[in-house]
Length: 457
Image 1 (cartoon, rainbow, N blue to C red):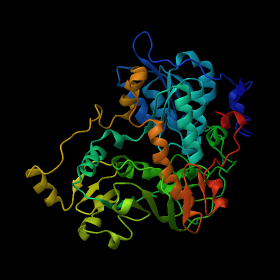
Image 2 (image 1 turned 180 degrees about the vertical axis):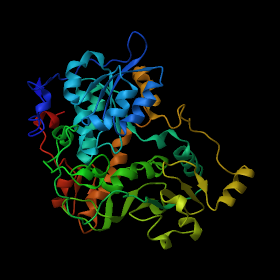
Image 3 (image 1 turned 60 degrees about the vertical axis):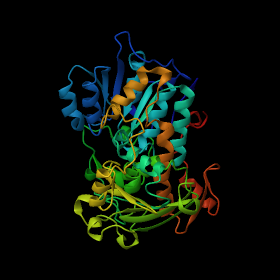
Image 4 (image 1 turned 120 degrees about the vertical axis):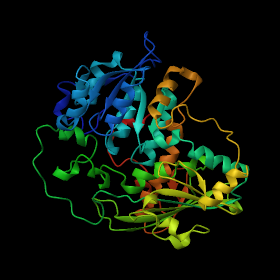
């Protein structure tokens, strides 16, 4: 057995004693004698609040522990569930309650998704991890490998994947209604947090309620400032993944799923306002995929962030100009085929041919494809899909499991790599390498100095 350590992280005083010795793998549980899955939520005071409340309503789940490094931030959810054990250090929680926890939700900032999820999976815990799955391509791939190796049920928090939208889009693609696919356009109004070529704010005193060393976790030592938490860390390169990492896993999911995309072979990106601390204020990325559904066997995906709607609307074909400037459509995707164009909203829902009057005419005429793909039993409730997958044992997997989520997240993270390159990147997915720019490969791997036990599967 090995110790999972990382310099600085394991030196935190919060462990209150010796390092935790991690078993190579504990037995994987499916349910308790009462038929329920015992779940702990890490990051309970932020995005984790949605997980806590959803799981509390699920008759097949039993909340047994809540963990958060910020007592003030978590006070509200703690008060709602006063009888559930509380922790601020996930390691201590997993150590003390190992036998009482079957599954964990990881709802922390992005930089802690990989280390916490990996730690839990090695202990035989099923894992639900919020999006994006991790901060780097290497981390996402490691998480998918660990889930498979230890036989745990996993799910990335992508509520859009429970909706009908990507299924309807796939039925349109597979039926030939769209024709051959030419281009996909995805866009977001993010960042809605500070991001760009701005200075790192001056240091502020650390609040007494915050265990800041634990919040930093595996990240490089960074000065605390008031506006870092609870939201603005998303724009900082040490902690978040910027607008593309934060939103592309939502917005691009329909295209990724409906056309069964693999990794791109070429990525090109431009950006405005990026420095050593912050991701850019605005970016545009283009990716090329070899795919039989594409015209001439190629599909191009164009990503835009940092502006309401598309920041280059003139590129889009056969779409009403006023449609692109509707403020209700500040996040979305257009799949442009040689015959038809389909629009999907922020979370890949409400698939509609354009113009909308044409969609209504096609529907009335019975020219839309039949619903051949099974729909989720739990629209907008990915936690329920995950719990059902755990209870089903080997018979069922969560639709948004890590095997699905890792390559989807990889697409969004490749944009982040290209933003730093200043030139087009040729990508070999099998080798996980930029063949024309090996100096950029470091951005595919973890930026942190993990102990060897994280590296050896």
